[in-house]
Length: 440
Image 1 (tube, helix red, strand yellow):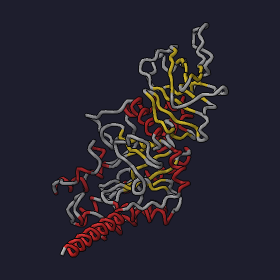
Image 2 (cartoon, one colour):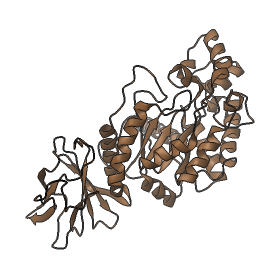
Image 3 (spheres, rainbow, N blue to C red):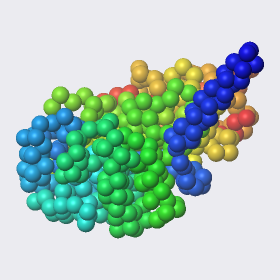
């Protein structure tokens, strides 16, 4: 009797284990990205995300207001709102140049968000930019502007399509089976046709970001992308892409953290809370020190402008990157992320250290000393502050702003002066980057 009970228990455990294994395999994320292309993607480091759709006219959350909306609301959203979308100030080159100046290496644009409104020329539906008063293919212009600026081209696409469900007579939902591609064969076929258009009508696409509620749809679309272009890097849908958060500790590359610049993905004209430039810079530093990419989102307004509140902060990021771009070029994380208020990166050969110092109250011309355990200098080590020659402090003839480095026991000691005049008032609260060569 005991043997029979043990046999039954063992059979139950075995069945339970196999069931979980099958389920895990069904949920397993497919990643056919080439390793060398994933390394290329990681080396890009910093990208601009752009969320933009016709409902920006009302300053609302992009797409999501359609879920749970009344029939009257949906009728006006689908049939009236597109008639007034006319972004006459849109300038793709201006967008691309702003991204490049900020040190960004790629742009990811929302070709179609969950609402189903296509921001590109498609044969699958009339619900899109080509049937607006503007009537031009903004995706094409963005792709061409990015290529001209030397930026990698990224396309965002969502298989969740509220307009398709509305036309189909299916209740708009994020959780009901019939509202998702896996439970709606017509929707599945529809979004695959759209994905093929995007992958074939705009030349070779570098990066694809697949959003949506279910892994099934993202995997199906990723297969379409890899079949057409084996060199494309699929980010969301194939690799880890945390949203509005990043891991506490380093994780293996590639991964990409996506953050809004304000509280909302799409432009919101009132009640918005934007990050400061320093917030964004520190976020980028922390993510790069942990081996990831930062995809920072911006939202143009209904006329196609980057609002002044966004451009102002983007300009400050550009200024910091103009000085310190080297810290993100061909660098990798160190096994120690940071000490106190200092983050670390190294060159790929691990012979050069970059120390990124976040010191809030550092006056122009003031010398500060720091001790670091993460690195060891040698008698061949040389130190510099990125952007400054270490020889001159403006208007101060007797000043000696030259940085120094020496090793004492287990600590590398650096002495650094904040010597470059960035603003007229000499106030510059953004991080300073120190470079030390020939480290052990």
